[in-house]
Image (tube, rainbow, N blue to C red):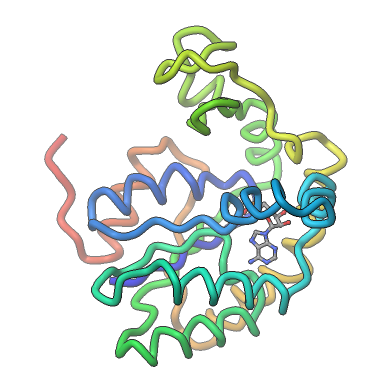
Length: 216
Ligand code: AMP
């Protein structure tokens, strides 16, 4: 099952993506992470990301398509987060899957209110060593400055500052929302209320996908 996970910044996509890819044995790809790796070798990309802007649509598509071609084994199904963000990116991804005899089986839209998102993003911390993501309110580490997994330092993501959050929202409303409307018109979108506890959202997603959840 190839799944695309969509939603505004801070709607909990990463958390649900990890749980879903574990449960369904999918290859979890997050273009934000791929872009941050790219940024380590490219100052222009670094400054785009840190400002909260998007990498130009076609440049990002070419980068992702090359990555897919070079790294994804033909038999693996993908859970994509952060891509596509534009209708054109959706079409390119669909074409790539078609060539492999596959398709996008589900598009999940995590619907969240702006108030809940701002609270969530300002409480998000990531480990500067292993990249583990925490939330000081909903998924707190034992010590708010130290990663439970590797002992690394917990920091605020550079683009989780109020100015960058505002810009990321602007891009979200300008692009991803149009993509969601486009997919919704085609009847492809599974909408899930993301202003609820992590486990409740996860069970709801599984139910809507027709997958049995574990008892606990
Ligand atoms: P994210 O972690 O998904 O918020 O992505 C972090 C940053 O990576 C974004 O603000 C963009 O600069 C870049 N990025 C990730 N995915 C895309 C995409 N599909 N198109 C353009 N830029 C992207």
